[in-house]
Image 1 (spheres, rainbow, N blue to C red):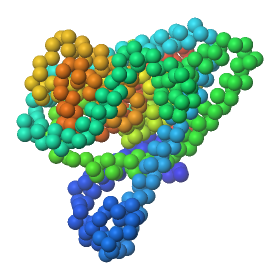
Image 2: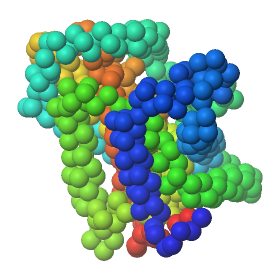
Image 3: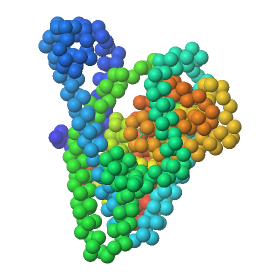
Image 4: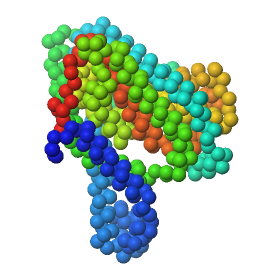
Length: 468
Ligand code: ASP
């Protein structure tokens, strides 16, 4: 598994590029007729391996295609499942160790306060960028009435299902209910449901408990969790050697299934979202690192992005901050040089509550739909969008498509018809990939700033030293 001495992030970039190319080729040239020419009239049952009269003519070429498709799916699925399998235990173990190894509650208060303040500031700045871009470019005015009706009709069923989910969850999303729900009544239930906010709460609570009892009692417990989280990070390192193949496998079906015509119709909207995310990545994070890390050990954009790029690429293909968390911790620790204490504390917290990309997306999507429906937003509405988008970013689970359900609440808060989400669903997957990258990059940037302030950032990054 060591083809040459190419750094891991380059191998992943190559996998991703080849995957995009293969996806575009399939998207443009693989049609139902292609299956027919191979003797397959019912591709779905053929791929599932079911017997069907319709596929009686399928020959060796069809079998080879099926094998290739199933192998691609298998590689992507196994990789994602392995990362998701790791997400809950790594949050639990890393955060307990992170809090307990800080040693005293005052340090926890200082670190926790700074971390949450940076999370909040970057979230609000991201929303500001989203709102400014969307209000100056007005992407809603670039979609024709006819296209709007067509998109609404095409995705109506999917949109209703998501609105129903949002309505079911609505009572839990009132601010007080949400705050109260962070405290788990049964920690094992929280773990089983992978409720990340509750897991963060219990891990911090256990970590605090461990700092309050004598070191002789807490030491062995901390070492157990330390060993477990170290073992998991090591497993992730091994798993990452599969990443170049996995990102290929994951990206091919996504690109192959993209409706390029819809992407074109919503092109300006997509550009505003992606442009806003790019501004956050190019200005906000490097700016924050530049201002908040000292000259002697400054984290410049080159050093930062080189170290974090494997996690960004996994986030892009998985659309899940949670699934990417083990990779984020690994990159921040082993490649950026952040101490394990700070990485273990900031990254799991960030993957759960710090979603700058999601916040920006909520702001752009809301204003876009308001423009589309010809609804004027007052200053009060804009402030409501800032507040709601911030809360959504804190409350959104780090899983694919989490934003869309929360978007329904933001829309309702400013009286925009929630059925409007049907219009943006068609391009949501692509935008989800991009906003997830911004989400995890923000966690890594805050981890670097906090480590630097605590004197726990290595003098130089160690990219290459631990590549798989
Ligand atoms: N997929 C995003 C994440 O995992 C959440 C979202 O915006 O949908 O970070």
